[in-house]
Amino acid sequence: MQTIRQPLPLSRPETRLSLRFSNETGGELLSIGRATIALSGRKPGQILAGSALALTFAGKRAVRLPPGQTIWSDPVTMPSTREVVLDLFVDRATGVTAMHPMGRATSFISDDGDETGQTDLGSHDTTNSRFFVTMVKAFDPQATGTIVALGESITDGAHSTPDANTRWPDILAHRLEDAGLRAGVVNQGLAGNRLVHDAPLMSYGPSALRRFERDVLSVPGVKTVIVLEGINDIGLPRSSGLPEQEVTAAQMIEALKTLVHSAHRHRARVVLGTLPPFQNAAFPRYFDKPAEAKREAVNAWIRCGKVADEVVDFDALLRDPQHPEELRAEYDSGDHLHPNDAGYRIMAEGIDLQNLAQDGSKRPSSRR
Image (cartoon, rainbow, N blue to C red):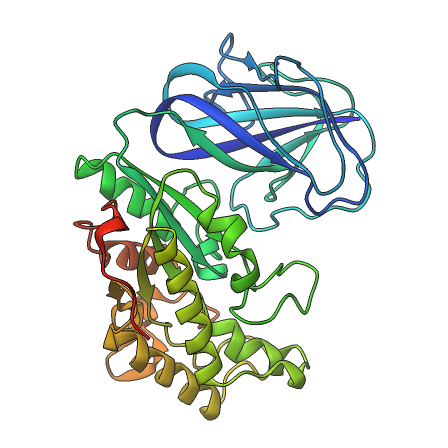
């Protein structure tokens, strides 16, 4: 029985919020005895004294989620903020369940007991993972829609500075706010994710095809989807010793077409991102010349722009002009696959803001 304290950045300043909790991957009951939401304090792991508000679920403070279930909290109103702190008192063992291991933000887990709403936790451990909370919904009558970033570890923010919110969707959200556009940004990056196949290892989750309905189309107010997926379809089968899961460029293109057509049926626009370079990626057998040929074929199809509403050329933004199969040194986190903070900023700055929150309902039917 422990309290989990998690900072949750918001894509724009908000006041009225609801949180989505999930036991979709759990095998046992998830029992939350109490939950609070508060403003951040001055020190890491601290909340602003007197700011904690109790979360309720259909009017009740405790909630029990059976395996496979989700629930939204009742809306709560608080001062305008770009970050909230969620406290969860989990009052019984959860068993084995999935978490978000690449949260890139420090969470705090108390040694024992209900410490929800306390300014400072007592004795505790820390982790960069997130637990049980999967989405924050804002109630903003002036909002122009939601932008969903669908991707793998590059969208998830691998190797970005912890607690700095420098993933490319974070920076995109700031750009939208600076431009006076009241659009939210939802980051649905999942490290190791692939277009076609489900996880070869426990942390990579269902394929983009299988999670598209849950993670994109079900997002409230979704108007635009930015898709950056496919590099793991190329590199992971050989790196993970799964040759039967090798895919061709044509199979990847068909998967991307399926995502685009699904979004269009939902009246959402799609921005497809080209796959950044990955020569010398620091994973065994991840890169070779045939793998590079697949990347180039997929990127050539994306650049044609025949299916998606727009294209953002992440490859051109990040590659070394002298060695186009490699990341530019100043944008390389060091593993030759994931950008650093500067690279994530370049990615976000390369996205055209003009049409991101535009309603896709009047767009012509997508083409094959």
